Structure formats: structure tokens, C-alpha cells
Image (cartoon, rainbow, N blue to C red; front, side):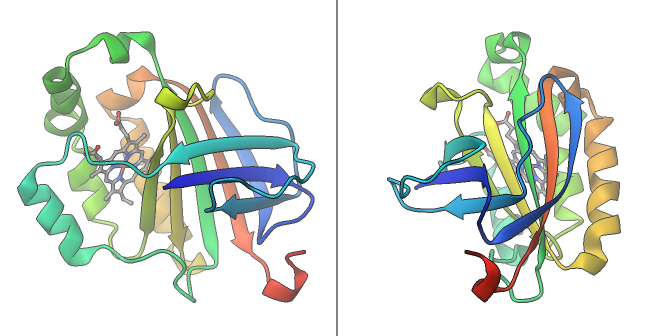
Length: 185
Ligand code: HEM
């Protein structure tokens, strides 16, 4: 499934903040639209990022089963806050072998183990875009109720201190809140 994220003047999410953590920022925009159809309607955009929902690369069967047992779906009524965090990893990362990347991600950084602690409060979807020739390698998307923002921020602090994040060379943390359907435009 191809998903397009557009920064533009209308859309179902209001952009509340944009925090640049590494690399170059995106142009500003008031709203975010998340489009799940292959060809979005032509509309003027300030920026556009695309990614595909793909197969798992690093997750073991045991981890996958544990995730499936607790994870929440997207578009829950109460999940009116969300974060789009586009990420690019360095050439050094991409030159590693699959087993070396898994070792850094999980055995050293506990990415999945840490993330699991925040489920089901945080619902997530990972989009891959490196092979689409996009400016980022991943578009990470998270939805949660506003009262879980603190927990989400704690998780980010832990992940960003981990060895895996030494390989992140572009990252932008875009926080949004859902606006009523009749005002989405
Ligand atoms: C909500 C809790 C989280 C859980 C349960 C979680 C779980 C996972 C899992 C299972 C994968 C591996 C997918 C695979 O096997 O290919 C993964 C990959 C990834 N996650 Fe998370 N994650 C969480 C939070 C986060 C956060 C907050 C970020 C970003 C700030 C993030 C960024 C990424 C990225 C960029 C990848 C792809 C890494 C790569 O392929 O090199 N995750 N996550």
C-alpha cells in the first residue's frame, strides 16, 4: 500500500509543531493530509512524502506474535494526536549486512522491546521509501490520545539515545492533531 503525506493548506490534521532533529527541514505548512490511494488528487502542496507499507525485515516470529497480541489499530476515536517522523539513515548503516543491522537495532538498542512497552497506547505504522528514491528512508506514523503525549515523548528520548540513532542523519518530528471532519476541507 502506497501512502502519501502532504503538507498543504487543507487536510484532516493540523500541524502543531515541527522539530528538526537532524539534517534539513521541510517547508512550513498549516495542515497535513494522509492519502491512502495510489494517485492523490492534484492539489497544491508545500511538501509531499511517499512510502509503502511493507514486509517486516528484522522482527522475529516471537516478537511479531508479541506485537500482534497488544498493538492497536490506527484511526481510533480517542487518538486525536499523531506524529509523522520522517527518518533517513546514513550510508554507513546501509553498508552493513542485515544481521549487523538487526544486532544494532535490537540486541544493542532494544528498539522493539522499548517500543512494546508503549503499546497499545501508541498505534503505529511504518512506511518504507528508500527504494522509491524519496528524500527519507522511512516515514514513521504514530497515533495516540493527547494524554499519552508524555509517554510518547519518553519513548522517543530512550530510542534517540540508543546506538541505532547514531545512524540517523535526517529526522523531523512533526506533531499534528486531528480536526473535525467538517473543517478538514
Ligand atoms: C510505538 C512503539 C514502537 C514499536 C512497537 C516499534 C516497533 C518496530 C519494529 C517491530 C520495527 C521493525 C520492523 C521490521 O522488522 O522491519 C521497527 C522499525 C522501525 N521503527 Fe519502530 N517501533 C516503535 C516506535 C518507534 C519510534 C517512536 C520511531 C521513530 C522515532 C521508530 C522508528 C522506526 C524506524 C525508522 C524503523 C525502521 C528501521 C530500519 O528498518 O532500519 N519506531 N519498529
